[in-house]
Image 1 (cartoon, helix red, strand yellow):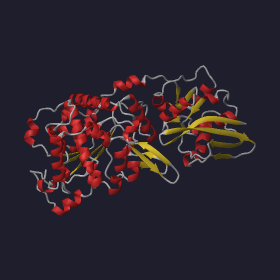
Image 2 (cartoon, one colour; image 1 turned 120 degrees about the vertical axis):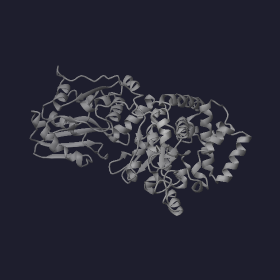
Image 3 (cartoon, helix red, strand yellow; image 1 turned 90 degrees about the vertical axis):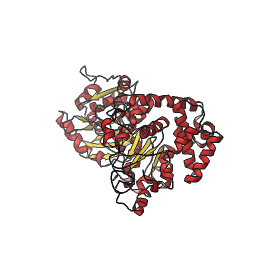
Image 4 (tube, helix red, strand yellow; image 1 turned 135 degrees about the horizontal axis):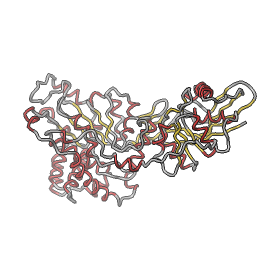
Length: 524
């Protein structure tokens, strides 16, 4: 007897239809084919125990399981449920007339209970596209899959519940209906941190506001204890709220990576990823034996924060250059090639020297000029050129900390950021997607192409003279020139100015401090 059960595989961020074909014939063996990995091969022992411990009979026949398409590698434990249901159907334990109408995934415990799997959201999207009547998932994945509308999603705790549903039993589980959209909008402002906690440091907060308003990359340099990490953690609180489409895309990435919390639905706040400096190149960009999104993709639509930037390996830092420009990361290996989105704000922090106290008025620096130069050279020029705003930060004296009033709350800063982003959306809305340089539609000033810079951020004659003088004195590259104009355009948007003026150029030049040849002599 042959039974076919619809299921799915996840490759990159997309789900691919897979069929579990189960055939029972005379004999006493179990054969699993269709390019299964070790986790799939081990499913035999889990399935036998789960079926028997649930009170059902495991057929004493020769069982052949084929996962089609046979040339697609099958990974993970999500095939346990469809294979088990197929085996039970061949034994006559389940009615087979409703099997083709449901797609199912799930890992089985030895007692027959269902355990959560990765990628429930992209699988649900694919099930709707394939026009299945319903999708059966473990109960802990049901809120994630229920994000997809126009699809019945059934969350099962035990294989017995799946059997009752397929047999159309009166006690069968019902499809889950959750208003995930309403929950999403209610949770958009649930942030743990707030800029009101930051006392002083007005120049740094101004730089972060400009960065948030234009989507610019930012690096902070200053001694330990000056508040670099504290302010970086608060940056997502002043970014515009996630749109529904951004949330769906972000949730899909986290679903594939297995980073969603149990019973989670849509990601409501912008991601903030802060990997340790010992992270490998693969963990940062993604890939591996079984391809998974890396930290730069997990930060998609949010913030990637690298603390102590020079401590990261040179190889890991250099791979950031391409996704910072293209907003996608292409991972190509011998057996696969996947593309992950990587549109994120890059924020970094570093000390001014190995000991951390170069230029600090309250601590003595023990580093020689050679060591300082060697420390700073760990960050390549091309990577530094891709960082629009370079901000110096000094520790706040105790007397200022004790007297300083609470800072401006994040909600007030966010209002100005949203107003500036709205101006940018209106500016770029008339442009076709082809004008984004092959990278899709442009949403903020940081994503402008050179053609757009000349169109929307062209300085007047006085500003041009100021910029020419700065370029000559600071020996800035052509890329730095464009970065200054982009930042100046954002500053003008924050002020509601239609033209880029000299004061906007002057402030933008002030955010290129690390490019100055006399930086090491000036200190902080």
